[in-house]
Amino acid sequence: MDLLEHEGPKHGVVLGQSKHGYRTAEGGGLPFRQTFAPDMIDLGSVIESMAPARLDMRILSLTNPMVFWAPEGLGLELARTFNDACAEAIRKHPAQIRGAITLPLQSPAVALKELERAADIPGMCCAYAAMHVNGINLDDKSFWPLYEFCEQPKLPLCLHPVAPCGGTDRLADYHMRNVVGNPHEAAIGAACLIFGGVLDAFPDLKILMPHAGGSFPWLVGRWDNGIKRRPELAHVKKLASAYLRRFHYDTISHDAEMIRFLIDRIGADRFVLGTDYNMDAGVELPVDFIEEIPHISDEELRRIARDNVMSLFDLSLPEDVVQSRSLA
Image (cartoon, rainbow, N blue to C red; front, side, top):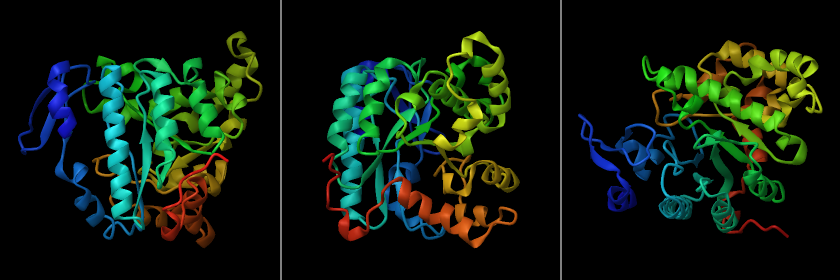
């Protein structure tokens, strides 16, 4: 935030305060006005919120607007600042905090260099990206070197919406950017990764979809039909439904019965606990939520609440956090 306030005005960013006194930023390429509540940017508040939520560990990722809106130089500086701040947070709280690597994807070559640097920071356990970068979809070949790097050390790629569905003005009313746009953005991202051949080219790439996959899992029947019938999809090697288990999913659906269906359809081993902290679209008591899933077994609960995330992110025990990730 300090960097944004110092450098942002040079690039058209207008800084201010909300009616509650929270720091705000808008303009200069930001997709819309951003509000930063204290519990979003204060590490102490993040730590204090964990016990009531029954959480032992958080993986911190940069919320909207990420850094793609900024010019290349500022984008890299913002990304490095966040990644280094995560490193310091991990050092101070090695048993409670891990980090997701933020990347200036508006310049994929620069992003790759930052990914190579930040992947060696102890406790940075995944890469983090949007499901489009300033309108460029995830199957664009400029991103493929990043996927190749993530596949080699098995560094999961965690996705999240930014400017959903292209940021269209049709979503401006009724909070539709969030309640409609974000879930559909997950489907667009998954479609590009499947139809664009990314998952075939990188068979060991691990990808976490947000919001329980959004509308993606619910559309695979229609996609299967399209693959069977449409010449535009004749190149796709398998039916879309065959790719469901290529992804991992968080539990942020706000509907326990829907999660029950998805577990039965995809498998409990593909779901990890999500919070979407500190947003009003998040889940304040995420463990309580998964305990409400109909007919959830002790094994499913243990997998979703602990085992899957430990495996997916290769989480080290606290005494091992000092060891850097090695590509050897």
